[in-house]
Amino acid sequence: MIKLRTAALSDIGHLRTHNEDRFIQDDKLGLYGVADGVGGLPGGEEAAQLAVDEMMQSVKAMPAGEPDLTNAVLKANESVANLGHKLSPGMGIGTTLTCGVMRDGKFYLAHIGDSRCYVWHLGKFDALTRDHSVESDARIRRARGEVVYYHQSNRNALTRCIGQPTPPEVDILTRTLRPGERYFFCSDGVTRLIRESELGEMIGRDAEPADVLKEIVELANRRGGPDNSTGVLIFVDEAK
Image 1 (spheres, rainbow, N blue to C red):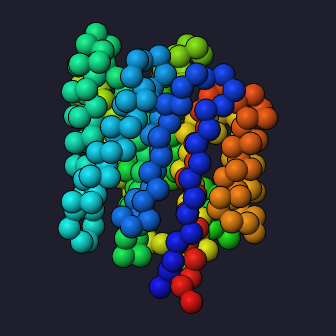
Image 2 (cartoon, rainbow, N blue to C red):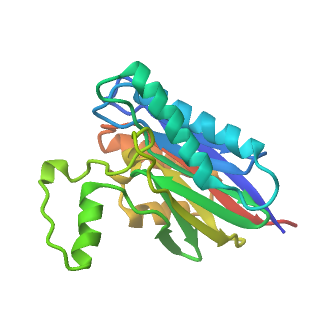
C-alpha cells in the first residue's frame, strides 16, 4: 500500500503582468498536473483554466479502473478551441497540458506541449515527457536520418497544444507506482532556468514537498523570473 504527500505552487515571476499558468492538485481524484497558456496568443489564462477545469470534470466522471485520459484531453482541446473562436477568431487560444492520475497503484500520464513531468527514484531523475517543440521534433527527425532546418528564434515554438483546430496526438504513459518515487510536474518557467541536475538534487532532498517547491520557485525568481513558474510535487510513500 502507498500514500501520497503532495504540494503545488505557482508564481507570477518578475516580468509578467499576468499568471497564465494553472495547476491541478486534487488528492481526492488523484489528479495532478500543469497547464501553461501559450505565449504570443491572447487568452492564455482562459485557455489554461478551461483545460484544467475540463480535465477535472472528465476524471471525476470516469468509472473505476484505467482512466481514458486520451478522450479527456481531446475533450479539453475541443472546449479550448471553441472558446478560442469566441475570444480570438483570427488566432485562437492555446495552452500546454501535462497531467496524471494516480489510481490503484498505477500512474497514468497524458501530455501535450512543453510543460514537463519527471520522476525521481533512488537518486535518479528522469523525464517522462518530451517537449512538443520545433527543436525537439527536429531532433527526433534528424535521429531518423532526415535533414531538418529551423531558425534559432523559432526553436521553442510549440508543434502541439490544447486548443488547436485539429485534434492533437496525445502522449500517454502508464507505469506502476513504487514507494520512494517522487513525481514533479512543472511549466517551462522552471525548466528554462533550472537545470535537470539541479532539480533532481532539490527534489531528492529530505524535505516536505511544499518546502521543495518553494525552493524551486525562489531559485527561478532569483535567476530573473522572466516567466510564470509553476510546479506540482507528489511524494509516493509506503503506507504504514
